[in-house]
Length: 374
Ligand SMILES: Nc1ncnc2c1ncn2[C@@H]1O[C@H](COP(=O)(O)OP(=O)(O)OP(=O)(O)O)[C@@H](O)[C@H]1O
Ligand SMILES: CC(=O)N[C@H]1[C@@H]2OC[C@@H](O2)[C@@H](O)[C@@H]1O[C@H](C)C(=O)O
Image (cartoon, rainbow, N blue to C red; front, side, top):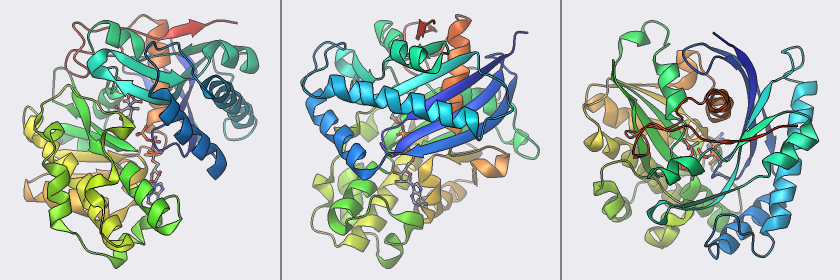
């Protein structure tokens, strides 16, 4: 068994900043989780990325960088390099020098139906700036092989689910749910391949709503939603969308769901209603799972919105399943995606599959990623 020390970097669809995490892993069953960190983007930079999403709509070939996107890609990469340097000097000090960096970059466009996914992130530049080998562009090869290009985290979710501490190790099928800007699930049966897909909007609509209606970037601890109620007609409008009737594999672009269905509510009702949309769209995913899960493990920033978690718990418990937070299972729900990128980089170095027919719809299990050496 060859164990690598790897660092993973994730800038997700919430566009709130860079998550960093360190792992020692063989890219298979052995995973020793290390320190994690986060560098927040200031509001002006988040707005630049948002503007970048608009410009990216013109992209037809994935290497095109129209308008400000080339400059944005360089700035995103430089920020990742600074984040790595600071992380190695602080949280990760003493954990050893990583042998590889797994670099997600920032998704600015995702159109799986035409085989196009674009992550801003210059792996070669990051390798030069950090002095470390970098594995990047880990979605593209999956698309070349007929996959959705997302979600890619399930290989790591499955490794975590197979190493759960007692009493949770009895709980199969286990579902790991990531409530990020968009939510995605990985269904892990007692044996066999994981099943995965995106489930719908996570926090992105809530963030957009509270920014527009209240001038704040997110509904911290669900405080705004606590003042409001669920408008069921709005929930129904969202859940009636054809996306929810489709079975997986399926994946979303951040702009596939908008606030169009939410217009007319006041700030608090909107926040509460969109939290319900987030939870119920995750629960609807059960319709597309091979069996009803026994245990849900919640990762991602949305687990800090108590309304999302309460709604999810209520629905899951009604179906006889338990809902726990990542931390209850000894995990770090903020770091899971960054850890996954570290894990996937090690798998990429070894030529192991990153994705499977049951996770992205690729024709056969495929590896991926591009290695930028020094
Ligand atoms: N204390 C909190 N209370 C409520 N919501 C929170 C809190 N902290 C974070 N969030 C939500 O979590 C979001 C960030 O989540 P996360 O970091 O998991 O997303 P991401 O990694 O960008 O997304 P994705 O998984 O889609 O790539 C924030 O934008 C916010 O909406
Ligand atoms: C194209 C893209 O960046 N998709 C993200 C997004 O954020 C959550 C969900 O949609 C998931 O499919 C994916 O990220 C996770 C990390 C993944 O690939 O597993």
